[in-house]
Amino acid sequence: MLGCDLQCRHDLLHLYHKRVNTRHPAKQDLDALVAWYQSAVGESLKAPIAFQLSAVLTKLSVQDILFLGVAGFEQQLITAKGKHAMFFTDVACEHLLANEDSYLPIKSDSQECVVLLHGLDIAMNPQAVLREMSRIVAKDGYLIIIGFNRYSAWGLYRPLRRIFNWHAPLIPWRLKFHGMAKLGDWLELLGFESGQFQTLGFRPLIQNSKVYRPLAFFEWLGRLVLPGFGNVYIRVARKRTIPLTPEPMLSRLRAGLIKAGLPKASTEGV
Image (cartoon, rainbow, N blue to C red; front, side, top):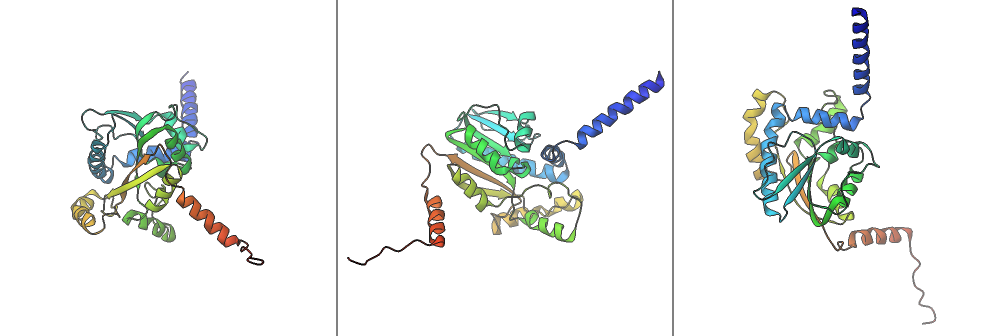
């Protein structure tokens, strides 16, 4: 009987580890990022992110807010009085980040405001996630994106880590860091008016809390000297009822036609 119990336990553990090891990389990254935000460095970012986001939400004329992405911010993300928040961080959200053809069980054009917490950093196809955000955000609604900034101290460290093989593929280094110019182009193509962005978190990433905490003066210095180069960005975009001018698309079309070469109009016989 004891041998049977031990064998059953061994089989269950084997199935558990097999399931964990075969989980999709995006889901693993989502869990790892949740755990990272419980570290000293992650905890130090939660409060500033929540403060800046609350300030942004207070200025928006919306009542209902949908939060998607990383869990664990529920206590920190306290919205302004009179606004209602709903956190959507379950299996459906995980599938969206892991699969290009996945959809959220949410009606189209139904959300006044969506906050995407590190969704683009984790997603296998960030553009597919943005297309789904464009589907569920109501006309004249808002999409607020929070993620790691490619052009920051952390972002510049990532290629060095790869070149010199520093550290294992840990969080946040194995995630996708996005630049504001590319993100702005993606949003514009989806019919969003890409507004201004702000960044925060200017300290270098040092896991030792005794060393990391005294570097708080980097926050003040970064906001003063390099306000757009913080490690985390918060970007606000608004979905327009009438699409923005197609000038960027026309410019690309003109550039392609000029490169291909167009026949010049003949003036003979005029």
